[in-house]
Image (cartoon, rainbow, N blue to C red; front, top):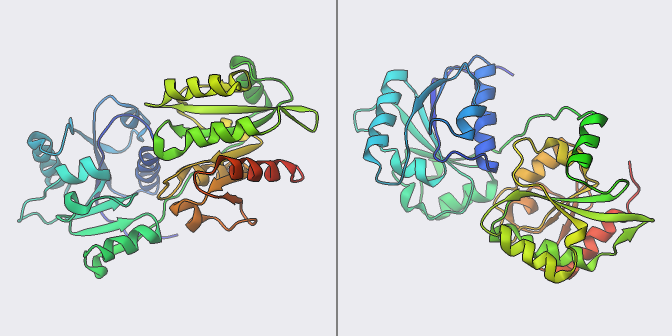
Length: 324
């Protein structure tokens, strides 16, 4: 693949590595590795900053909030200093802060990973939705069709973890040996359907084919304490391992027998792409992104939204499939 050289500046707020942030890192690193002229504006010292290729030009900014005029000035100065043809912003905070001056020669491209209120996006010059549904949404909300584009996300091809690494995770987190493992991975946020996953897991038998059935909850977030309490009330706390946030999710996908995305609202589903990259059998609810990504029974199994009973049934079907 031959890329046309375009000097691009990429702007993102926050410090932690969530799904959207991991994609940001993958994209800018890939551009750098293909000898593209790429620079970033990020918060200095965060997980995002640490994951960016050392060869990428960096412009630190605090990126505090929408009206952070100092960060706006820093972004404009970076665009001019780097002679950026494109300034691409990711998610709401970076997009709202970025306001290129009228005499700027840069194009402001806003990348959206959700069906957001467009009030803070309309000042951009062009827009990218990471699903076809989001791209359609942009046009339906009045943005010019000839400046709205669909460009999907991608994930890196994962290197298989060694048996020693996988066994080390089992030992470190005291995961039962020989257990069949279900995996939930991501931020503990209501949109992700974690309570539905726990309810579904409680309906599944404690063993399948003579092996214990165990759930890996890989992530963290505002629902952490609430979900642990729910697991206790459901009587399944001894069948769950809580790992906290993991910077490298690949070994967890590879350790699992089945990945479950129980989201109630999922515009894309980077976690599904990651599961596929790690060759992990996947069950997902029928939220927006998974419906666009997946064909039921072909590259995964789909379950109804916000329906723990139906989700448990689909998980049971997936567990009954012949193992590779």
